Structure formats: C-alpha cells, structure tokens
Amino acid sequence: MAEIRLVERFPQLTTAQMLAHLVPPPQFHNASFESYVPDDEYPTQASTRDVVRNFFTQPKSSKLFGKAAPVAAGIYLDGGFGVGKTHLLASAFHMAKGRKYFGTFIEYTALVGALGYANAVTALKGAAFIAIDEFELDDPGDTMLMTRLLGELMDTGTRVMATSNTPPNALGEGRFAAADFLREIHALSARFTTIRIDGVDYRHRENTGRAVVCTPQQVLEFAASGGVVAHDDFASVVRHLGSLHPSKYVVLIEGVDAIVWSDVTPFTDQNDALRFVALVDRLYDADIPIRASGEALDAIFPDDMLSGGYRKKYLRAVSRLIALTHRSV
Figure 1 (tube, rainbow, N blue to C red):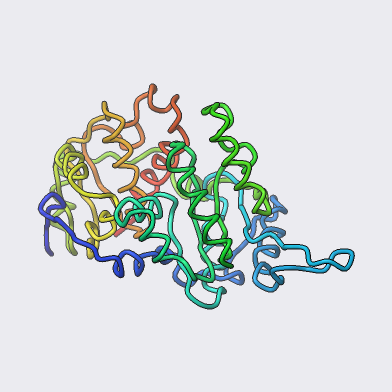
Figure 2: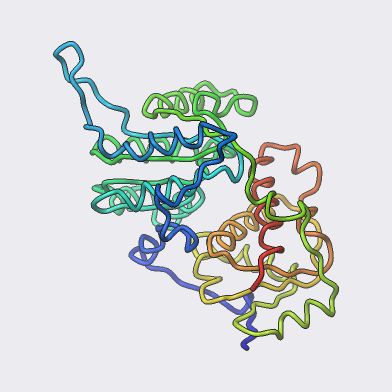
C-alpha cells in the first residue's frame, strides 16, 4: 500500500509525451465494432455502428454526374450521455490506418494552449485520423479555435470523427449571438455527416443515481486499504489544479489506483469548477475509483452553475462522478 498526495505532484510534459497520451482511455483500448452491443430498443445504435464502421471504406471523392464530388471528411455523432458514442469513436480509431490521435475536446484545446496554435498544427498535420470526444461549445474562443484547427487538418486530407450532445447546426444556439461565431459553427457543420444515436445512459443503469458519500472514518480506512491511493483534502486539490496546465492532469493521476478526498464542499468559483471537470474527465478515462467524505460529489455544482452556459459540462461530470464513486477497486 502506498498513500500519496496529488498536491505534491508537479508533472512536466514534452510535446511528444502530450501526443503519446492522445489515445483512447484504458477501458476502450480493445474496443471494436464487434464488441459494441447495441440496445435493441434503440435501432439507431446498430445503424450508427454500421455507418461508422464503413467510414474508412468510403473514397474521399465520388463521381456525381461525371464530376468528382467530395465525400464528407467527418462524422459527427450526436447523442446523450452514456449511449455508446465513445465506444464507437474508439472502435473507429483502432480501425484507422496511419498516424492517428484520440482525445477529448478539452485535451485538444489544452494541447493548443500548451504548444501554441502554430506548433499544435505542425504536430497534428499529416495525421490520417483525428477523433474528438465530447466536442464542446461552452467557450466561443475555444470553438472557433478548434474550427480553424480542424479546417486546416481536413484541408490536407485528415479525416475527423467527433462526438457531442448537440447537432452541429444547433451549436451555439441560445448561448452566443455573434454572427461571426455562428458563421464558424455552420462552416464546421458542412464538413460533417451528422448521425443521431439514441439510448439510455448505461452509467445510470449501473448505479443508484447518487454519488456514494463516505464517513471520515471510512475514508481513512479506504486510504489504507491497498494499492496506490491519492488521499487529499478536497479544497487543497482544487487549489492545486489552478497551479497546473490542464494538459498535465493526465500525468498528475498516472499510476494512481484510487482517489480519496476528505471534506468535499460545493464550488463557489466557476474557474475552479471547470478545472475540476477537466480532472474528472481524466479520472473517468483512467477508470479510477473515488471515495469522498463531506458533500455528495453529485451536489457540488450549485444551481447557478447548472443553469448557466456550462450546464452540459457539469452534468457530464456529475454522471461520471456518480459512476466512479460506485466503482470497486
């Protein structure tokens, strides 16, 4: 047994290391179209699997009335939480040939933030396939940045597949009214074939729907139970995240078997909450169990945050926190 502190870790990453981390999460390392089990009650799951599986067999252009017509260079999977989008995305990644990358929207924007735009383009250019999980539109600057980045990569032959919870033509509606922003969004939409995938969040089928809350004594016992356990005061972890670039969160939790947080309290600062969401994504990707005392982890985002523009991001984090507090070690 080894008990460590996340707040005592200050990871560093080179460009090569950042790119090496752009692969599917461990639970999807062996994902395939054959292992994807569609829900018979939602026919779009099976039909979407078939379309995604055929994506790489399509030529990049086809003959239409004797002229070359471009085939969509991207697929956009739209659907709710936990309906199998990431499994299909990872399956496509494994099927793709050549240099390829898989990451969340946050990971790609973090890469650009860490390297600078020009260096990020240079690092990614020439890739045969780019997979983007959970394409987000909470920040218009990040959205236009990714639109520009994808445009440059797709212009040089890169195929792209993305997942989101909103159809591309609806991206930005109801949140940002700037004409330039909407123009960027619609330009991105035209490059993708959009597919809707329906279903019920499988994470909610696996648990009670609420995050498990431990007593302080249970937290101490769990921290001493075995493996590499990162045991920290919740407020200290939140402060520590502010001192690290989000691109380093994946290394921050490397080698950790379980997370233990004491004295969880609700967020009062949105920047703290958004950095924490990025950490939750990394913990979920690594399938690391969480045990925590204090406030329930599904109640740490106050109503004013849940009713704001980052609502979907927070709800995704809640869904993942619930799942991880139910996960056994």
